[in-house]
Length: 272
Image 1 (cartoon, rainbow, N blue to C red):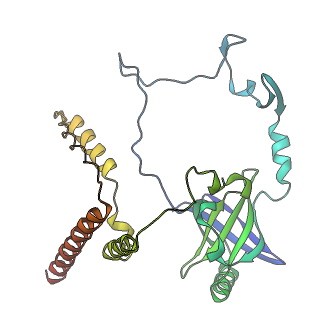
Image 2: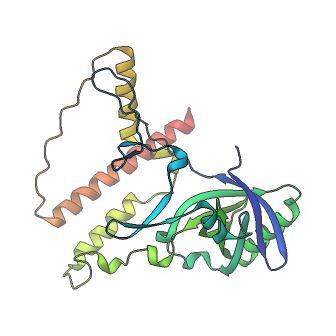
Image 3: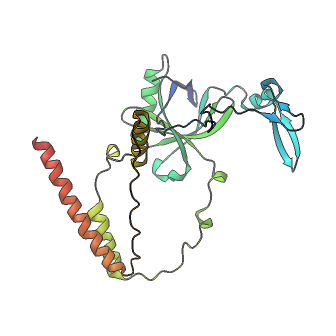
């Protein structure tokens, strides 16, 4: 796996060379936009309506609209100057309890591996964080852009998640119609808890797959092979469920049956 970035974690007088790797990758099917008449890929141009011409790369600058139609420009050198000498550093600010961080603040995940000559100090940091059950809040600068991040230890490596700043996370209070009093019958709560218990299992990420992506690949393969694409008829609309208790009872029975089927499949798999 190719490193996306090389730099160093710093805290106090400690310097930990690290390499950063993408921990995730999108598997979305990508489409090109074509001209419907000839199927030629479309080309997008940066067009200036005032000068009535396409703008070349060296003719483009960054602008900030401070009033409607009014802009100030900012140069690349000015942006680069904001980060100063911290262009390849991960500066730890605080060590915190990872459990106290709301996941809503997390953005993207990266693996941090030891850099050249830094394996011992890397392991020292990782094991110390494991022993103290702490995560590190840090500022990381990549390509002249500073981001907030949290670094957490695992049994194998350090994992870094870039984070949203507090003013970038919306308050849950902005969600309409939450809170307030709702009258729930004790039996309804017990039945719902029973249903959750019957649907509870260990988290196995490999068993969850994208049905949409699989169906899309089927369509693509069929079109490449020249086969006609058969559309599945739409499922009939579900009737409105009026009786909540009846729905809970029926759901519990279905969950129990599915759990029994799953256990039988697992037993059959082990026996084969």
